[in-house]
Amino acid sequence: MGVKLDVNRLDHTIKLVNGNQLHLLKAISMIVEPAEQVAIVGASGSGKSTLLSLLAGLESRQQGSISYQCGSEQLNKINDVSGFVFQHFHLLPELNALQNVALPLLLKGQKDAEHCALEKLRLVQMEAQAMQPVTKLSGGEQQRVAIARALCSEPKVIFADEPTGNLDQKTAEQVFEHMQKGAKAAGTTMIVVTHDLNLAAKLDKIYHLENGELRL
Ligand SMILES: Nc1ncnc2c1ncn2[C@@H]1O[C@H](COP(=O)(O)OP(=O)(O)OP(=O)(O)O)[C@@H](O)[C@H]1O
Image 1 (cartoon, rainbow, N blue to C red):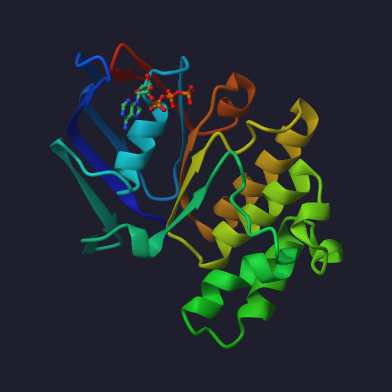
Image 2: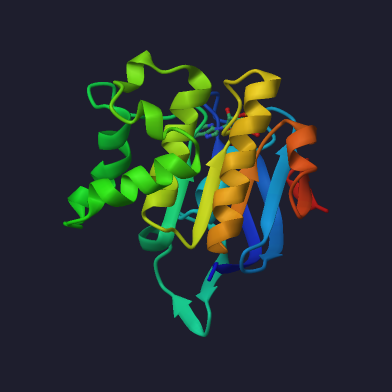
């Protein structure tokens, strides 16, 4: 069961190095339903990554509120039930694909970590390369490993920041499809920041961030 996000009037101002202030996000409100897959698009510098970090609880809110609900339960912390996929993969170069995917589960003390990791690698069609050091994998393969890692902890919501930004169009589409399928199969809510309108069009809703305002 995915998480429902109820975002109410988020406001965010940034202090620039020259001392000026940039009113980046202006009273942003949105509702993301459980298992919904939404895109946030907008020009470079419009504040998409900042908004995603706020939604994911990685950055402190200045104003406004976000409530997270899973079934009938109100969640106090989103980090425990969320997965994050970054543009630059953020894999550990000294480990192989399987170890990268299994690591978060091992850290939690899960005994069947490698079994779960292998299952997720199969889902993104990377089982055959499980023992490969990640440095030997292509960009698209590395991102599929990162997606398997995000799916491994069976998150209730996935936040993805330009997950295919480093990939060519064809690979981007394949990787995106894996991510979408994985999230759909598990009923996971997914929020994706992307500049790629083709990919955004594959999701349930597209939000546009412009001049600090979010509109459908
Ligand atoms: N901590 C910070 N301190 C100062 N400025 C910041 C900080 N974080 C972001 N900014 C600025 O806020 C603006 C929005 O940044 P953000 O990364 O959220 O935009 P974005 O829409 O994701 O951009 P891109 O598509 O290029 O990644 C940029 O001008 C950036 O330089």
